[in-house]
Length: 220
Image (cartoon, rainbow, N blue to C red; front, side, top):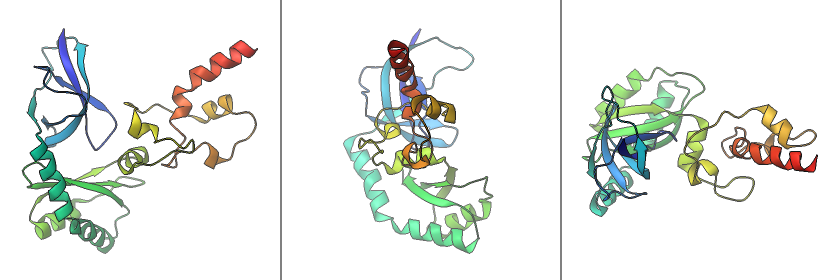
């Protein structure tokens, strides 16, 4: 068995295991790791997870634990280049692409910019990448995400008045169905009553289902 740390990236709620070589890394730290998209910064969500050793697909090491100076640099890079948002939106409009800007972030060396967007279907953004790279003189990546991931990035509050679950504590997205709505709510429900900030069915319908079943069983 090996110890692993779980790292979550800005692009999605899924958490990935990386090898934990010391106890120096703590929950909430930001780290630099190598991924299929190159070096990316992620946030540590758990530590000391026991995992079986797999020789065919061994856990990757983290490249670097970010210092306070590194974190400040990333924030400064983004704040100094907020004009990239307007450039991105203008290019999208000029090319007639059906996509909505969500966020952007820099790589630690400042040479790569990743733009996150939502769209109802797949988008051919190859020309957009070329145009953006040419204008801002950086390596440009585009990452499509779902509406729930968009809500997690933008943050906010749910109908319950509490911070949205996907931002606050959820570590995976559950499949949520209308059957859960019918089981937990008596009678018909207005769609807005069971929809979260993202416009999708509320995440809490999934993890509260067991509790609802237990209460109904006790009261039967």
